[in-house]
Amino acid sequence: MNVKVLKFGGTSLADAEQMKKVIRIVKADEACRYVVPSAPGKRFSADEKVTDLLYLCYETAKKGENFGEVFEKIKNRYRDIIRGLGLDFSLEEEFKGIEVAILHHAGRDYVASRGEYLNGMIMAKALGFTFVDAASCIFFNENGSFAAEETNKSLGELLKKTPHAVIPGFYGSMPNGTIKTFTRGGSDITGAIVARAAEADVYENWTDVSGFLMADPRIVKDPKPIGVITYRELRELSYMGATVLHDESIFPVRFAGIPINIRNTNDPDAKGTMIVPSSKVEGNDGNVITGIAGKKGMSVISLEKDLMNAELGFGRRVLEVLEDLGLSFEHLPSGVDTMSIVVATASLEGKKERLLDGICRAVKPDYISLDDGFALIAVVGRGMVSEKGTAQRIFGAIADADVNIRMIDQGSSEIDIIIGVSEEDYEKSISAIYNAFAG
Ligand code: ADP
Ligand code: ASP
Ligand code: MG
Image 1 (cartoon, rainbow, N blue to C red):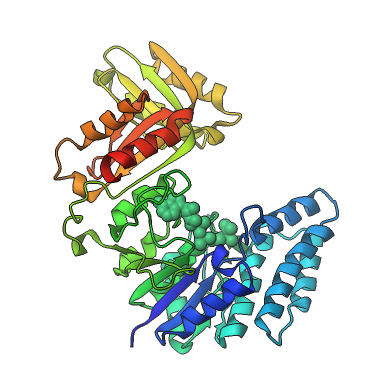
Image 2: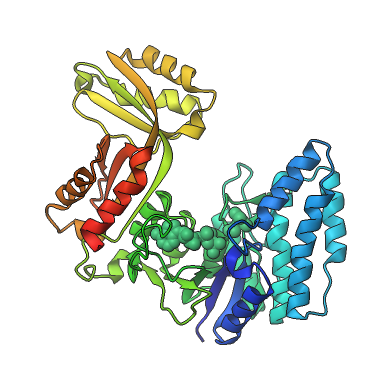
């Protein structure tokens, strides 16, 4: 029999009405065996996500202040859902336990994870599925990295014995039993881990848009949906800011060749986007580009030095300075005697001077500068490999929009072109590229 793993995002579980849609989706198909819920998200744009409220409880308690009012809001979100679903079920004892734990300064990750934990209990009750605490089957190593093989073995064995289960997203446990979460949006990763362990035929990721769109719908009006996208393309787009799917969530399923299907809880008849291995697709329906994504908040360190290209170990010495400061870089475009390093501005806080001093000492450049206020835009498409003149079309569109390109980098895979522009030109550039290829 087919096995499907379904992950539902925060907006799909924001209130009882949304939950009813989810229950209908799961109950409609016998193959829907394993469900991975997020915590309740926003019901309307000015609303608060339960996860954000939990982080606020943690911060408030840490300052020794009263978090009761915020916690009451959280409890009421769950009480409303239970009432709206007409369940004969109470979480009051769980609430008490969590409140006491926060009072006794439980860890930040433990507190944040309770959003998914409580929602998982409700979902399990509503669906009549077994509740499986993610702490008992999703494991992290001592150094905080995800323990992929250990988890896959133990979760696989557990799922074999459990025909229908709800496994809360976002967290797992450390070797000493304490709770650890993935980074924000991490329920997508849990869904992929469960899909691999269950040897699922498909990993359905249910959200509030009818699939991956060619551009962020908050920037481009009604962008075209993407029917089929490869894991590679998706990773580029999600890493570069298309937040639909956590960029790390492809690894467990790619490993097992399980396709991901992005679906819309509010429009379950829409086919959504299929994410598949490159070997499974041919061409791109005549589309040169698959999608555009990007992110603001970047800084660029520019270096110049005569005969840089001949200086053995130049790049290594520069990157060692970054490594010593715990900084990772986003991109590294270089010319004959120039090198630029793109780094997230937020990661440089309190480190700028040490970084510049360190580089000057390490490689004695003729010129060095550090500029903030950059945005990166990635134009991604498997169709670009065979199509000549794509770069020209992109640059032409940006020039016509009167935007100055500050940096260009083409990935070695030839499926992406990265462009750096000033932050204030970000939206304008994305719209211009979209219109040139899909408008
Ligand atoms: P969930 O809570 O279901 O995990 P997210 O908020 O994480 O959902 O992701 C869905 C949102 O991603 C959409 O509502 C949309 O605003 C945003 N988004 C950004 N880029 C894209 C894109 N290229 N295609 C579709 N949605 C996008
Ligand atoms: N609830 C967590 C967050 O808001 C994880 C998730 O939704 O995927 O980041
Ligand atoms: Mg998400």
